[in-house]
Length: 352
Image (cartoon, rainbow, N blue to C red; front, side):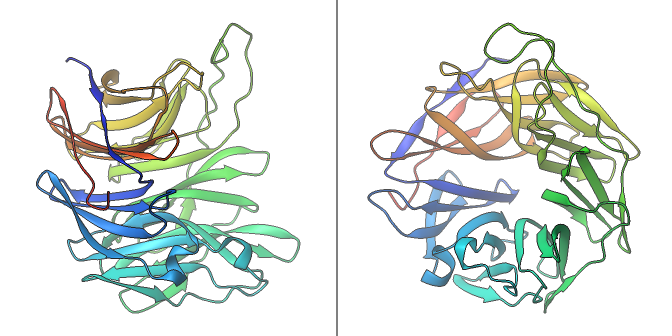
């Protein structure tokens, strides 16, 4: 299948996050550039992004880390309070409901909490993961939304000093969280509707050639930062494991080789295919969109220049994908394009 470029279209914007429950229900947080200081929510309708509202100052002044929109009128937003965190600062969450942004109350934690990712399957079920400070160590954190309130979920025994960085839920009885655990390397844990349990540890992969040039084996930073699942037996996780992605089959993790590239954001379709953003991390390299189907990788898209950074994507079939990103320059230029199975079509953001 031919590879085509993803062309930058919208100037003076910084694309932050994307969440798609379907091609007809995609949302993005944009803004925060030199000429547009605010942050707004935009919805993709057909082939056009539409402005849906601005975040209020309480939300826009902090760093939004994750967005999950299970319906066409409701989203959950996780955020890092940054310097505002105190020993008893609750983790920050907000909802977007029918055009309004509303901060949500979360449990007050002993040492203050940070939520790095959120995944929702409906307006009454979300899971957010992160960490909080307990005595002299950081401990993993997971919280659940039931439509009315957030509550802390018990963590599995055996994962102290774990840092879950991403989570994907397909139903109230299945979520996969991934991250890193101290000096032990990448780790993952599964929610079965009642309890969290640790999976087998994802295997490290040691490429024989260092990205960007010749060299011997080296140890990558053992962290998984992204995960997407289409079912309880099909998940793909990537991160700072050079040259590999990790595929979950319901019982174990299997390495999917990426050569000398790093894996970025991922999206798995119900058809069984998974898509990811990959980068070789060299000065002249361009970021790519790869598809994993039946154990084989195919490149379906490339950034137009090496200054473009893809931030997120949502894919639902071999002919339905959307990717967003930003191109650096004197002021940020936003990238948004859809894939129809053969070509990429650039889209314009409304807040330009």
